Length: 181
Length: 114
Image (tube, rainbow over all chains, first blue to last red):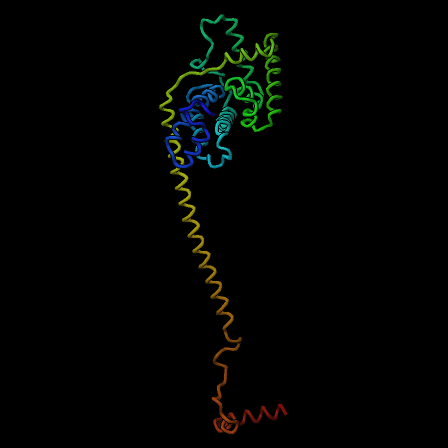
């Protein structure tokens, strides 16, 4: 991921980190802690668990960076570790509110109807099958290209596209169901 | 609702709250160091166990080898004290060495055999 002239890309930082450069480690950690934390937060719904997942994901990614065949795919690698950890955590615990009040994004000035629609959409996203949800998370929120979404979701690019298409279709269905009920 | 509208709605759900990023970076650093220490300790323990195992295996192999070697060199089943050592005496000298009672026994045995 090339950022600008002054910012080394992932490939270079991973190579430097493998060579023992701790500064490269810090730069990679700071580069990915935000998106990883936000991804985890959308899954687990609270700040403490999201922080825990993000930290563990980064630590695991760094510890196992030797297994990474292509240093350039560090981003996909760390997203995959984080998504797996978040999914495991959600699977292992009882269902709870989708997003805690402190992280809910709907503005208080937003009209109530609109707020309710967004709440329903958030609930519908949480009801998607894991693979479809992951594809939506990565495509919509992280804005990853389908090729990279496929790497994280461990499927082909075509399969990622199909999953995304099915996810949107399902979301519309779920929203309609709620409208009718 | 079209796909584009739905995607736009989904984007508006994206929560990106700020948190203590410095604290998180420090926690990641600490977690990584702790993980490395744990791994080194596990590796040390495995090496120690491997060296103890290798020593035991060598000792067992040596014990087995010695046992086999000694068994191979043991004399046949007859006890040592039943051997008669004549110290290369000639048959005549052998008879001279015998007492009259022994000569009688040998003669009787010879006659029986004949």
